[in-house]
Image (cartoon, rainbow, N blue to C red; front, top):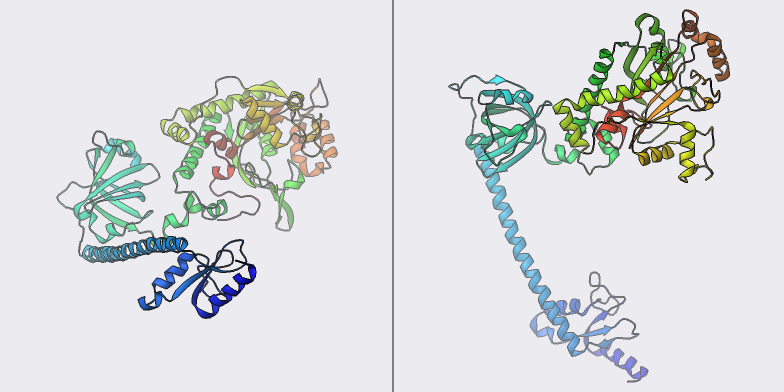
Length: 577
């Protein structure tokens, strides 16, 4: 057929017959209506419309189709029409089946809702009462449950998990901060209104006898409470405001920080804080056992320790004051009267470092020791870290939490690697690690950034006591070594996976040298009169260090960020809750 004949025939179709139009390229089954101006995209849509018409009209309609790549409409072939009808029949059967299933589901849902409402109405008639013929229940904490097996007890706690088994049994895992206890409720105990509407994080009281679980079954501590009576103390909301809708493991990190008060109830967060508590106690036990005295220095000061750019400044009754960066200077004043001293207190750094290892407020473990050498200081730091780890590792409950949080963790028994700053520079250059700012090799005097430092530490895979840093990149109070005045008697302890955990040094103990250091730093020595007096009235060689508790916890628990290792982290842009 010629082009002119095809055009004439198409015009005849559109004028003399009832056609539905299909355009495979420009049509739409969703918005089209079958006209030439608004065609369908597939023949199936056209057939669907035809079969929906009265039977006497169906035969009067035909289908014109413009295939992809063609310019004009042509009547659909018999085989294509047959295929379209077959597809329409299959779709119609599927739609009918879906409609029937939807209707069935609706009926089942309505029946289920009616049954649930009936059960709720019936449950309001169930009144639970404690059986006065039973022995009086002894109030215990979950951590004491093993010793109280086979006796009737009373336990308060929060619903950590729950599972309903049929209509006559319910399992509730209770949490009270000291442990977890599986509670089994049966019969009427499961039929009350409180039982049917019980929600996660509701506070409840349960009464009953603790029994070992049957062979082949598991539960926390290998036992469960067979409940004979229980009551709600404080019910948590359900629905849209339920606990699981407020926070989840998949929530955005910023939301988890905003809802930190709820996140703390989770297994990992609570375990980290419990490990932290035991680590803090272990540090105190270590220092106390080695003859140190704990002191509590002020946190409001008028002097700087680590540089003025990181000071939090505030008005102190009309005078300029700061939140302390470190308690080191105050600890040094205690040496003549108390000997070796330490503190576990907060330090503050106004560093706009939004990294996973920086906080604006952190717990600082600091110590100062008189009459020691630099090698003594290195030995002291290594012994402290190993001693604290061993103390927490020897506690079965703490060890279990650490193992769950960080299955690969084991206490170090081998000596820490001791590496000088110059050796670290050589290692980085030998490994092809370049400076980020210009892509060149590191040079003596460069302050090694976090990323290359972490790369080196992780590659070596052992704790590193990195020593003898150049004076210009360290604090003013660190003394130069006698053999090389370019470097100081300074040390950073680097841990795999975390980086720097401890920073320490010997302290300048000569009065004139310290005065000169103040002048080089541009500090007014008059403000530090009390610190200079330590070099005037019986000075002595001494040294000390500071350890970030959050970084130490991150190392032990394999936490990705130090923000997870404190109660409510404070950093750039975050000062709540």
